Amino acid sequence: MSEGAAKKEEKPRKFQAIRGTRDLLPPETALWNRVEQTAHEVFSNFGFGEIRVPIFESTDLFARSIGAETDVVSKEMYTFGGFEEFSAKVREGMLSEMSPEEMISLRPEATASVCRAYIEHGMQQLPQPVKLYYMGPMFRRERPQKGRYRQFYQIGAEVLGGSDAPAIDAEVIEMVMTFFDRLELQGVQLDINSIGDRNCRPKYVELLRTELLKVKDKLGPDSQRRIETNPLRVLDSKLESEQGIIATLPRIADHLCEDCAAHYAAVKHQLEMRGVIYRENWRLVRGLDYYMRTTFEITARGLGSQNAVCGGGRYDGLVELLGGPPTKGIGFAIGEDRLILSLQESGKGPAQQGRDVYIAWMGERAHATAIRAAKDLRKAGFSVELPPVEQKFGKALGQADKLGAKYALILGDNEVSEGLWTLKTLADGSQAKFTEPDLLDHLRKSKRVSS
Ligand code: HAM
Image (cartoon, rainbow, N blue to C red; front, side, top):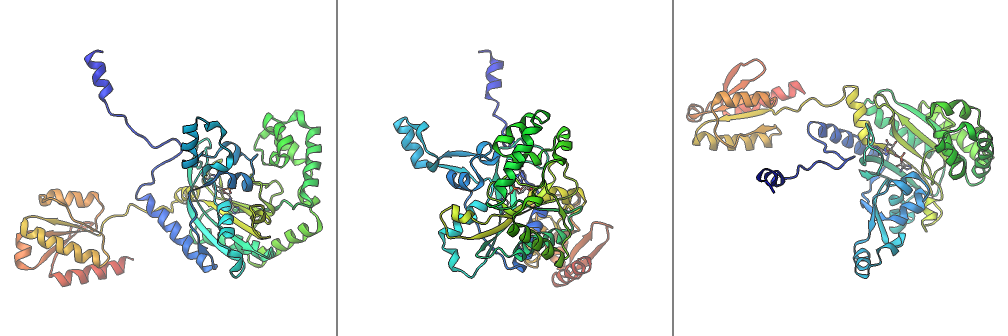
């Protein structure tokens, strides 16, 4: 091997975040925190409590609830062996024989986990309905693009209990709209639909399949496949060439059973009573198997093709399917990444957060005073930058400027021996001297004026 080649090999590998994942950095993280704080406030105003569920669960839990044939479960989950079972199978050389119950997956969503937790903790004993919300990362192996990631964040809520009163559906939707309103999210559009129940949906799906078979040749390969696997998903198609055909298909609203039609009408009435503006969208079917009756999706401005910022719906019977008592359920999840993108696009992102005070100190005695000043100012709620090593004043002021500090507190030998500290306002370069208590007072007053 030549010397050059050996040198090349020594070069350490440059690590990068895995495709579809990303780092969230300041100042953007301040916006994430504001969004999450607002969610805590609004959701607790509506009587919801926070639940934190694990990041991974049995693969079987997701397969049973979301549906083994759905894209999410069949193509997008990060699945691996449960550690003990996995090492045992490796030792026995029988890895390929692991059954789905022994596998675990990173959660692609949290509704299934919340239902599992409802059963596991006997929450049916609590006053009903139980109203829970959550926030955190979810994982789906999708093709990454703007607004679509493999690790993304959701803020969601679920209502579980004995009642499927349409007012519950409407209040859940009202809550998410209130949240978006509080954040001043722009271009919010709520679409709603009812996809029927066990009574009426199978008949509608059959009718749809029959009609789709008549026009099969005019459809693309994805839709052709879906005629067999899940005809409802054809309605989701964004293919330009299929739009004319889809417009002529039978609509579920005309095929709901009496109970579902009455429920849907009442949900709409309840939304109107709450002043929530909606659009009916008969093509809104959603991609997860557990839904029935009410489904909804919310889009917002500035997101391109991935513009759904929230999706949700009713899932009565899911808790039973997972071995729990008969339970009604409805909920939603907001894509937090997309919500943040939309807020940023409309200029609602936070400005670079500057420090309040940069302490420019010189000399050992001044250093001790600077440490004490930093402690007191931080205690009083100011953001303070205290340089770890001595700097010439000119350099320190330049650094204060770069960090967007409002003030530089200048502490040299003179200031310390006189007990008069110099405060420089960086915006206009003005300077004034203060005693220690006066300085704190002055800063407090000017903070009150600016906030
Ligand atoms: P979902 O429609 O699969 O529903 O996801 C909800 C939202 O999560 C989407 O509208 C989107 O904003 C965001 N999202 C989904 N996948 C990605 C991704 N790869 N990158 C970025 N954002 C994404 C659910 O997850 C249901 N669990 C919602 C629910 C709760 N239904 C009833 N309760």
